[in-house]
Image (cartoon, rainbow, N blue to C red; front, side, top):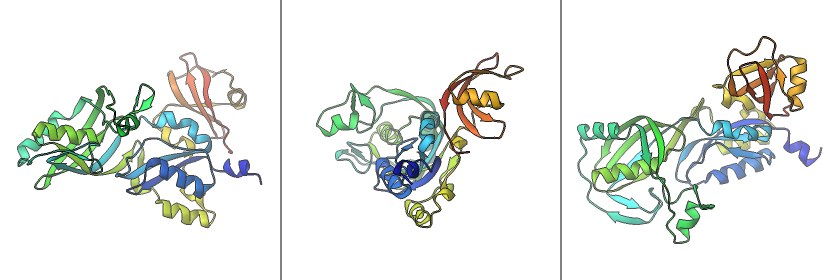
Length: 305
């Protein structure tokens, strides 16, 4: 069997519990070696310090990454008060230190209210955001100061607790694009002592939870027994929240060739990104559905069904 055939055998999603000290790129590279599938992408970066859920897309499923990056996420971690760092986490250089104040229940509730809902957030200087075509972290590590702009993010739920003097536990559910490092930094600024993120774990991303994830060691063990498919989820699993359309044999054929098809009886409602299935249940890809019932292919997947 050729290498290309081997690489194309796995299409779908694998949930990985990323260990501390690994970059998301490291985890993807390890998964490539384990599975033999070269086409692997992830749906949301985790910092090296962070642990937890990393959603990997394999093979044809990499074409769906853009639909999975907007998921809400839940994190828990610890904020360390009294020390500001260059990266807004424990791995950065110390920029300033101060004695942290006592943080009682009333102040915790005020902080929760202040940082809940839609807020403006300045991303960390050491981040993957592009500034003038370059990654902010590359500019910062070269000694420059990336000119980042505040961005609107949404904090759906924020819970803070005092764990020890100068340390706060954090549990947050937020929208895409939220930096928990920035949240820790900004909480420290409001308290007047500075702060950084001491630890972080991602628990959920959209419909996925870390409890269903495998460690890289477990994935390697499955591969050794020829059972990687036991950790593989269907390619459309991450789009469960999107509308679905079902087409007959002629519609499936046309969709597979990138041609529009008009469903008999029109459409129940229009959709910019609907999951499209054949009558057999085979997932065909993503289509744009017009009010008249026209289904226009957006992403055609060539999955073995």
